[in-house]
Length: 200
Image (cartoon, rainbow, N blue to C red; front, side, top):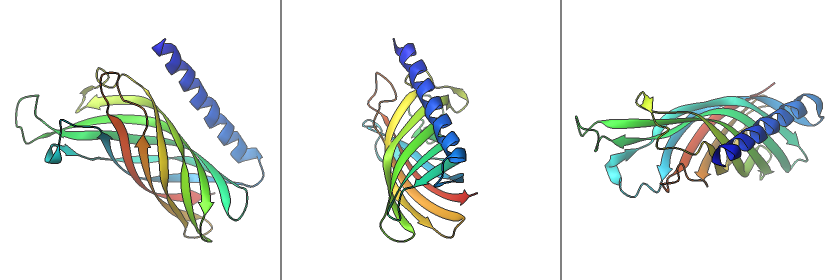
Protein backbone atom coordinates (compact mmCIF):
# COMPACT_ATOMS: atom_id res chain seq x y z
CA UNK A 1 0.00 0.00 0.00
CA UNK A 2 2.83 2.39 0.91
CA UNK A 3 4.65 1.72 -2.38
CA UNK A 4 1.40 2.26 -4.29
CA UNK A 5 0.92 5.66 -2.64
CA UNK A 6 4.47 6.67 -3.55
CA UNK A 7 3.92 5.71 -7.18
CA UNK A 8 0.66 7.68 -7.30
CA UNK A 9 2.25 10.76 -5.70
CA UNK A 10 5.23 10.57 -8.05
CA UNK A 11 2.92 10.49 -11.06
CA UNK A 12 0.93 13.45 -9.70
CA UNK A 13 4.12 15.50 -9.26
CA UNK A 14 5.27 14.71 -12.79
CA UNK A 15 1.81 15.52 -14.20
CA UNK A 16 1.64 18.84 -12.33
CA UNK A 17 5.13 19.75 -13.51
CA UNK A 18 4.21 19.01 -17.13
CA UNK A 19 1.05 21.11 -16.83
CA UNK A 20 2.98 24.08 -15.44
CA UNK A 21 5.72 23.86 -18.05
CA UNK A 22 3.20 23.47 -20.88
CA UNK A 23 1.26 26.47 -19.60
CA UNK A 24 4.49 28.47 -19.49
CA UNK A 25 4.94 27.90 -23.21
CA UNK A 26 1.38 28.23 -24.52
CA UNK A 27 -0.68 30.37 -22.14
CA UNK A 28 -0.85 34.14 -22.37
CA UNK A 29 -0.02 36.20 -19.31
CA UNK A 30 2.64 33.81 -17.99
CA UNK A 31 6.21 34.87 -17.30
CA UNK A 32 8.71 32.06 -16.94
CA UNK A 33 12.35 31.75 -16.10
CA UNK A 34 15.04 30.03 -14.04
CA UNK A 35 16.07 30.45 -10.42
CA UNK A 36 18.74 29.22 -8.03
CA UNK A 37 19.92 29.90 -4.52
CA UNK A 38 20.95 28.76 -1.05
CA UNK A 39 19.15 26.36 1.29
CA UNK A 40 19.72 26.34 5.05
CA UNK A 41 18.03 23.09 6.05
CA UNK A 42 17.30 21.30 9.30
CA UNK A 43 14.64 19.02 10.78
CA UNK A 44 12.00 19.88 13.37
CA UNK A 45 11.22 17.85 16.53
CA UNK A 46 14.81 16.80 17.19
CA UNK A 47 13.94 16.59 20.89
CA UNK A 48 16.91 14.45 21.91
CA UNK A 49 19.42 16.61 20.02
CA UNK A 50 19.50 20.04 21.62
CA UNK A 51 21.67 23.11 21.28
CA UNK A 52 25.09 22.63 19.71
CA UNK A 53 24.32 18.99 18.84
CA UNK A 54 22.40 20.12 15.74
CA UNK A 55 23.43 22.38 12.87
CA UNK A 56 21.78 23.39 9.61
CA UNK A 57 22.91 21.72 6.42
CA UNK A 58 23.77 24.32 3.77
CA UNK A 59 22.85 23.34 0.23
CA UNK A 60 21.65 24.59 -3.12
CA UNK A 61 18.40 24.68 -5.04
CA UNK A 62 17.89 25.33 -8.74
CA UNK A 63 15.20 24.95 -11.38
CA UNK A 64 12.54 26.70 -13.43
CA UNK A 65 9.38 28.66 -12.66
CA UNK A 66 6.32 30.14 -14.33
CA UNK A 67 4.22 33.00 -12.95
CA UNK A 68 0.66 33.54 -14.18
CA UNK A 69 -0.02 37.24 -13.73
CA UNK A 70 -3.72 37.70 -12.94
CA UNK A 71 -3.63 41.38 -12.00
CA UNK A 72 -1.33 44.08 -10.65
CA UNK A 73 -2.01 42.70 -7.17
CA UNK A 74 -2.14 38.94 -7.59
CA UNK A 75 -0.41 36.09 -9.40
CA UNK A 76 0.19 32.34 -9.16
CA UNK A 77 3.67 30.87 -9.45
CA UNK A 78 4.64 27.25 -10.00
CA UNK A 79 8.20 26.02 -9.68
CA UNK A 80 10.07 22.80 -10.44
CA UNK A 81 13.30 22.62 -8.42
CA UNK A 82 16.11 20.36 -7.31
CA UNK A 83 16.52 21.07 -3.60
CA UNK A 84 19.20 19.91 -1.14
CA UNK A 85 17.85 19.35 2.38
CA UNK A 86 18.88 17.45 5.52
CA UNK A 87 20.63 18.16 8.81
CA UNK A 88 24.03 18.05 10.53
CA UNK A 89 24.13 16.16 13.86
CA UNK A 90 27.02 15.79 16.30
CA UNK A 91 28.63 12.34 16.16
CA UNK A 92 27.17 10.99 19.42
CA UNK A 93 26.41 7.37 18.51
CA UNK A 94 28.89 6.32 15.84
CA UNK A 95 32.15 6.25 17.79
CA UNK A 96 35.25 8.20 16.91
CA UNK A 97 35.60 11.90 17.60
CA UNK A 98 32.48 13.11 19.42
CA UNK A 99 33.06 16.67 18.21
CA UNK A 100 32.54 15.70 14.57
CA UNK A 101 29.23 16.21 12.82
CA UNK A 102 27.47 13.66 10.63
CA UNK A 103 25.72 15.24 7.62
CA UNK A 104 22.40 13.65 6.72
CA UNK A 105 21.70 14.59 3.11
CA UNK A 106 18.16 14.33 1.74
CA UNK A 107 17.75 15.72 -1.78
CA UNK A 108 14.38 16.30 -3.43
CA UNK A 109 12.62 17.28 -6.61
CA UNK A 110 10.07 19.82 -5.35
CA UNK A 111 7.02 21.52 -6.85
CA UNK A 112 5.98 24.71 -5.01
CA UNK A 113 2.64 26.27 -6.00
CA UNK A 114 2.47 29.79 -4.61
CA UNK A 115 -0.05 32.60 -4.46
CA UNK A 116 1.76 35.91 -4.97
CA UNK A 117 0.12 38.88 -3.23
CA UNK A 118 1.69 42.14 -4.40
CA UNK A 119 1.73 44.36 -1.32
CA UNK A 120 3.74 46.99 -3.20
CA UNK A 121 4.61 47.63 -6.85
CA UNK A 122 7.61 45.26 -6.88
CA UNK A 123 7.19 43.40 -3.59
CA UNK A 124 5.08 40.26 -3.19
CA UNK A 125 4.10 38.03 -0.29
CA UNK A 126 4.39 34.40 -1.46
CA UNK A 127 2.30 31.68 0.20
CA UNK A 128 1.44 28.11 -0.75
CA UNK A 129 2.13 24.37 -0.56
CA UNK A 130 5.24 22.57 -1.76
CA UNK A 131 5.19 18.94 -2.88
CA UNK A 132 8.44 17.00 -2.91
CA UNK A 133 9.80 13.60 -3.89
CA UNK A 134 13.06 12.37 -2.36
CA UNK A 135 15.62 11.23 -4.94
CA UNK A 136 18.61 10.69 -2.66
CA UNK A 137 19.28 10.03 1.04
CA UNK A 138 22.81 9.64 2.40
CA UNK A 139 24.66 10.06 5.68
CA UNK A 140 28.25 11.05 4.84
CA UNK A 141 28.35 8.65 1.92
CA UNK A 142 26.30 5.78 3.35
CA UNK A 143 22.63 5.00 2.71
CA UNK A 144 20.13 6.91 4.84
CA UNK A 145 16.97 5.25 3.51
CA UNK A 146 16.69 2.98 6.56
CA UNK A 147 15.77 6.10 8.52
CA UNK A 148 13.84 8.29 6.06
CA UNK A 149 11.38 5.74 4.71
CA UNK A 150 8.86 8.30 3.39
CA UNK A 151 9.90 9.69 0.03
CA UNK A 152 6.92 11.98 -0.52
CA UNK A 153 7.04 15.30 1.35
CA UNK A 154 4.58 18.15 1.79
CA UNK A 155 5.48 21.52 3.27
CA UNK A 156 4.04 25.02 3.43
CA UNK A 157 6.06 27.90 2.02
CA UNK A 158 5.92 31.54 3.06
CA UNK A 159 8.21 34.35 1.98
CA UNK A 160 8.83 37.56 0.06
CA UNK A 161 9.97 38.32 -3.48
CA UNK A 162 11.24 41.63 -4.86
CA UNK A 163 11.53 42.55 -8.55
CA UNK A 164 14.91 44.19 -9.08
CA UNK A 165 14.16 44.76 -12.77
CA UNK A 166 12.08 43.30 -15.59
CA UNK A 167 14.51 40.36 -15.72
CA UNK A 168 15.79 39.77 -12.18
CA UNK A 169 14.17 39.21 -8.80
CA UNK A 170 15.35 38.10 -5.37
CA UNK A 171 13.43 36.08 -2.82
CA UNK A 172 13.52 34.71 0.71
CA UNK A 173 11.30 31.86 1.86
CA UNK A 174 10.69 29.50 4.76
CA UNK A 175 9.34 26.01 4.03
CA UNK A 176 7.76 24.31 7.05
CA UNK A 177 7.44 20.54 6.72
CA UNK A 178 3.98 19.05 7.25
CA UNK A 179 4.76 15.35 6.76
CA UNK A 180 7.02 13.09 8.82
CA UNK A 181 10.25 11.80 7.33
CA UNK A 182 9.66 8.34 8.75
CA UNK A 183 6.98 6.29 10.48
CA UNK A 184 9.09 5.94 13.63
CA UNK A 185 10.02 9.64 13.89
CA UNK A 186 8.30 13.00 14.29
CA UNK A 187 11.04 14.81 12.38
CA UNK A 188 9.96 17.03 9.49
CA UNK A 189 11.87 19.15 7.00
CA UNK A 190 12.49 22.81 7.81
CA UNK A 191 14.23 24.94 5.18
CA UNK A 192 15.16 28.61 4.84
CA UNK A 193 15.84 29.69 1.23
CA UNK A 194 17.46 32.70 -0.40
CA UNK A 195 17.35 32.87 -4.17
CA UNK A 196 17.64 34.89 -7.35
CA UNK A 197 15.46 34.48 -10.43
CA UNK A 198 15.89 35.38 -14.08
CA UNK A 199 12.90 35.86 -16.39
CA UNK A 200 13.35 34.87 -20.04
